[in-house]
Structures are given as C-alpha cells and as structure tokens.
Length: 397
Image (cartoon, rainbow, N blue to C red; front, side):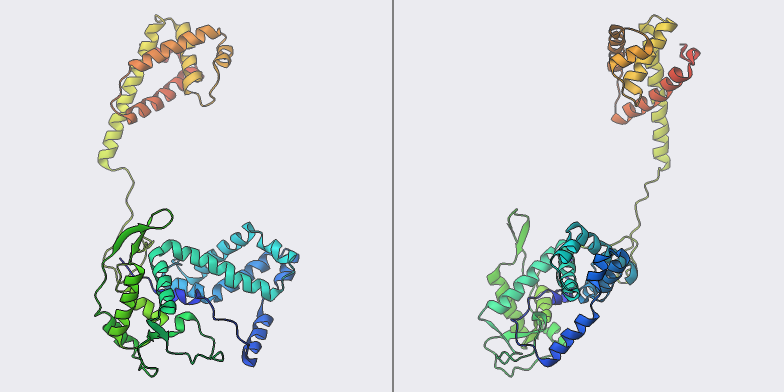
C-alpha cells in the first residue's frame, strides 16, 4: 500500500473565471505567442522532423510532465528517454485523431495549435495514464477538492472576495474551517504533518460502486467531509489544497497499482527481486529425455501396427505412409482427392487407408498431453524421412 504524491494534480485543476487581464499578463501572453513554434508552416510543408522537434520541446518543458516523473509515471532511465517515448506517443495520438489536418482546415494560428497540444492533448494523455495507474488516489483527490469548495464547513483564507485578486490555481488556494477568524495563523508543513497524523486512519468501505460495480467506495462523502474537518481541527491552521489533500489521504487506506521494474534501483527497498530463470534444470531435462524416448517407442509401435495392417507388403506400406504424411503430418494440408492424385491411387483407397490409420491411432494410449505432442513430433520426423527420402528399408520390423 502506498500513497500517491499529489503534486501531479496541481496542473489538472479547473481555472478561475476569466478576469480582465492586467498589462503584465497581456505582456506575458504576447511573449508566449512569439515563442510558439512554426506549426502552420511545418504542417503545410509536411516537415515531420520539425514537428517532432516542436512536440519534444513541449513535452520537455511541460510542468505536468515533470510532475509525472516525480509521481513515478515516467519510469524510463534518463529524462531524454522518457521524454522521447512520451513524444512518440503524443505524435501517434495526434496522427490517429487527424488533429494535424484539423489544425490546417480550421486555419488555427501557431499559438492556438501549441496551446491545444500542450493544454489539451498532452494533458489528457497524462491524466488518462494517471487514472489507470492510480485510480483511487485520483478519484479521492477530486472528491476532496470538490468537498472543500462546495461544503459550508470550509472557506478560503487567501481571498479578499473581490475580482482583482491574483489568479491562483486550486491546488495553491488556502482553505480552512468556516468558523475560524480571518487572521488565523498558518503553521509550517512539518508541524501540519505531525498534527494531522494524530487523526486515526479510517476503515475502508468495501461497498462496490460505479457503472460496472468494479470500484470500492473507500469512504462515503459524509465520512470524507467529517475526516477533512477532523484533519483541519487537528492542524489548527489553514492549508493549501495540495497539502490538505495529501494529509487527508494519508488517513485513508488508499491502494493503487504501481508498476515497478524488477531491475530498478531503489535504495530504500531492502527486498531485491530477480527475474525467474526459465531455463531447463537438470530434473526437467531428464524428464524431457525420458518423454522423448517414450515417444520414440510409441512411434515404432505405431509403424509396426501399420505394417501389419497391409500384411507386410512394401508397396501398400509405402502408400499408407504417403497417406499418413499428406493427410495428417504435412504442413501443406492437402485434400483427399489431391492426395489420391499425388499417390496415383483411387479416392476410395485413400479413404480406406485413412480409416486404418485412425483405428491404429485410437489404439494408442497416452497418460499426458505432452506425451502425445512428443509422439506427433517424433512421428512427423520419422515419416518425413521415409516418405521424402525414399528410405524403404528403414521400415523393416
């Protein structure tokens, strides 16, 4: 059981209502527009190399990608490899959705294209991976954020209530209990963590929910709201949403799936794992050789029985071996009429030989499926040598 670092969530929060941009904000927007890549020109000239370079630049500098690395979503060795793989996945996704054609058809500008790729396509790609790798942490973090904003038990402590306040992401907003005074003192993060850990961990609610009934409740909304109140009351201090989510979820039995490479270097983990050695050991080798010897014995017994069904006549024995090869063992899978034409006999004779072969096959008894497979393999090699090389004397019994 591990708790997910929620720093990756800070880029996923809904924005505040649009307000009139200040001169400094307008200047920053103009600078970003000037720094955007030449997307339209690259798309019109089908310059794949330049498109790849621009996508790699977006991936390398995207804050959510850096947060994904710290949260363990990008586990490849080295930043270059992780960014290259993610760029490849983003490039394939844009191609499969025909987004490049859409950008040209709708006459989007370079800045609009870069904003959509960075803020929508890449973000959706990473959040989809986050939901898959950390489903409970992702879902509970969202529920905590919603309750903090909607419940009357909580209110913001970093807002004056006017529209001229600086733009702030939800993860950076400061919330506390509604009953606290405006000048409530804030404590440092270490003190908050120690105080929050005094709150007992809640029991897991195992009721199944969701459209397919494959997710557990973990904790109901009323109980979750009560837990948030208990954590804030124990901390006795307002906290930003990111910190508050982390401390609340530390009091919950959250279980997520972590994909950890076996050869990863984790200095904090004393358990060392080695891949399973799938090579054959001495006992398996002995059993295999005994099985092969037994299969060869079955082959000799089977060929002896076929020899007896044709009363030891060489010509008829060669024909029945031909039927055995072309109808049962050959990879070409010929029809009965084709086999009759190849052997120069009638279709009824081929049918009679097939009946005799199947009768002798049913007389064989194998204790395991593996023995039957060994028999088939050994029989194929033996009959191939007899039929294709013409070693008629090799069938003497």
